[in-house]
View 1 (cartoon, rainbow, N blue to C red):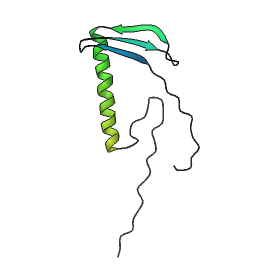
View 2 (tube, one colour):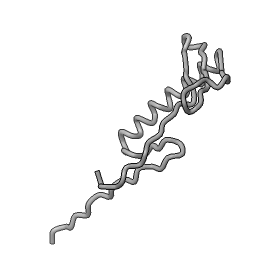
View 3 (tube, helix red, strand yellow):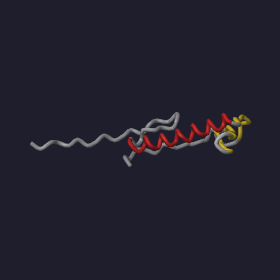
View 4 (spheres, helix red, strand yellow):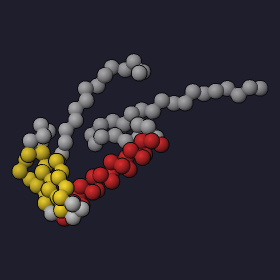
Length: 91
């Protein structure tokens, strides 16, 4: 929008989650290509982990509603927010 050069965007997951109700779950950690690493978290700890991830997403979306560009993916720069135009007062 500002005419800047585009920066390649890379995205990868850290884990894949499966819930089994509110008290049990399975989390399989994955590499950059979304392949399982063999590390996993199961049971109540996995359910709590998944709940925290979901709450973080909701909180981030609420913050973005109030201040667009506030959230930055880990390891990425935040968007530089445009400055509001200066308006001269009559008189």
